[in-house]
Image 1 (cartoon, helix red, strand yellow):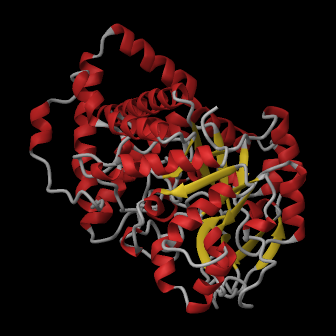
Image 2 (cartoon, rainbow, N blue to C red):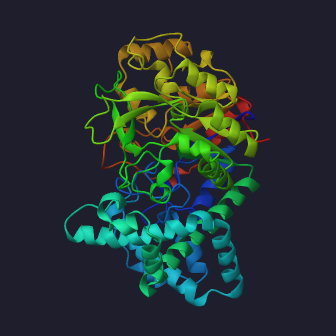
Image 3 (cartoon, rainbow, N blue to C red):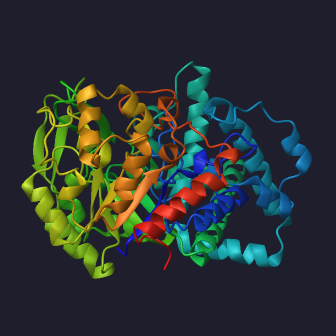
Amino acid sequence: MTRSSGILLHPISLPGPNGIGDVGQRARIFVDWLADASQTLWQVLPLGPTGYGDSPYASFSTFAGNPILIGFDDLLETGYLQQEELKEHPTFNNSKIDYATLIPWKQNLLSKAAERFLEKANINEREAYGLFKEKNSWWLNDYSLFMDIKEHYDSISAQKGLNGAIWSNSWPKDLALRNEDSLHTWRTSPVHQRNIEKKSVIQYFFFSQWFALKEYARERNIRIIGDIPIFVAPDSVDVWANRDLFQLNQKGEPLYVAGVPPDYFSKTGQLWGNPLFNWKRLKELDYTWWVRRIEHTLTIVDLVRIDHFRGFDAYWSVPYGSSTAEKGSWLPGPGIDFFSKLKESIDPLPILAEDLGVITDSVRELRDRFNLPGMKILQFAFDSKESGKGIDTSNTFLPHMYTPNSVVYTGTHDNDTTAGWLKKASKKEKAFIMHYLGGKRANYLKELIRLAFASVSSFAVIPMQDILELGSEARMNTPSTLGGNWSWRLEAKDLDKESSTMLKDLSETYARNRS
């Protein structure tokens, strides 16, 4: 936690010609921009393959990489794709991702590239691929098998006019419950065998590009902050392949699901629907699955933010089938026992705790016992609605309340952009900002960014939308809504010298410049 600063930007938002950002050459251009701006942190969202709703927090696998983040430039250079194959592409909007159009087009091209790899890869590439498969077999084999079965039954579901097929209620019982003979028959079928292999090749493409990007960033003194959602998606290989680690019935359906209870922001709470962990069973197994999850993530990134950290202390359990999160109960999480076991493998813990929302003393004690930095959000500091009590100068999100062991943001991926938030702020809230800053300011947003850099928080991380002073049209996500989220993109012109110079000046002025 050396004093540093950086940008929050998911790779999907990077500019480029193919409908979505990627982790290939376009990402290296962004890393160069960060280095020119004297920034040493790049925070991303979860990198796994996304499902219905396109949320990075609802992935088909907590270990796999998202195929649609693979860059085509590298595949063209190796000859696994041909330039003419990219010429006939859909019309893309450079400022928004159209997943419905993008995904089938890109998946088709990646399948062609994987087929050519299996046919034409030279001996060195085949050896590298073999090592990748061997090293990652503990998650890769199940992932590739799961995705092949899923695509098959999703196709059948689509023909019936249904939206996807969740393994627990749409697959044949023998496949859903992992009958070994049935799985062996599926794996060894010539068609499925080839499809499964191609899915493993595509994962090899992703991780080859990602690790090259991570090394490129490291050479430029930039650390990558990753993200782990505490819960996993019900329609995931994580649940399918590890049913005993979750609170499920004999069919593989959840008994209880995750959410948060009613509060000032939601009268019925938030019903997330994720299956809850069977912490008793995880403890019996020395939390091996969770330890592997964090270890694997830390091969991909340098530090990791754990979303909904409070769930390790206590989690809200809602009976499966409930229409809202109102009727639930708080149950104890693994707490100190889990993090003590984790420290046996990873010490010190390079973990940032997402400690937002209603946080109890026991959550703070767990966070502080393991010296985990928490999050400070400047929007929450001046929002009189945040506590429901109006403006409060003892609000812990105000910079004079910070400690160095924290990360300050103007906002997060779940907030409106700060420009959008300011536009909706009341006169009272704006007057408080002005008063806190010591008088009238020409540009509230720039002053809030400056305030973040000037704070004692060891890390200052600013969403790219705030650097560009973009309004609500550039918001990344509105929680509890479907459609239109996770689609905002930069344009190439946005990576300009003016923004770079501003960040460099702030980093130097407030001692966050490159070491």
